[in-house]
Image (cartoon, rainbow, N blue to C red; front, side):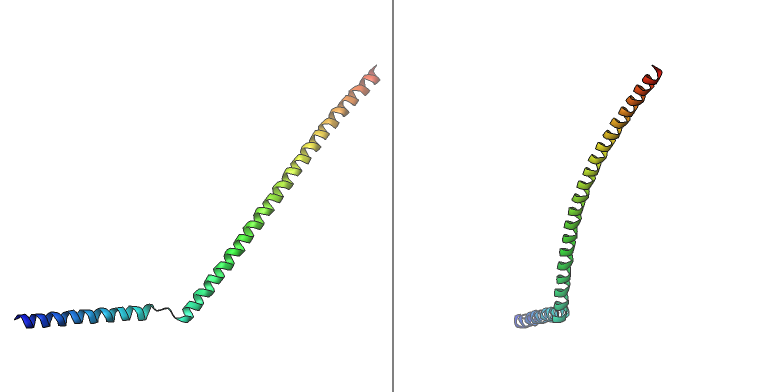
Length: 108
């Protein structure tokens, strides 16, 4: 094989490699191309996801507010319960003092 034949053979091989690469690129682009219907569906899914995230954020905010309200009510109820228990304890003590006083008066 002389020099001219070698150059021609190399040029043909390079051209075939280029053509094969171009064809492979065309095939990949053809099969991975996103259609307008797909884009519309993706847009709709993105919108639905955004709305779901907003709804979730609103629900979290509502639950946090509700938890704060319930915690406040619980604290108030516990304070009222402590006050009522203190009053009941004081009333029992006074009742016991009155019984003792009455028993001493009756015995004396």
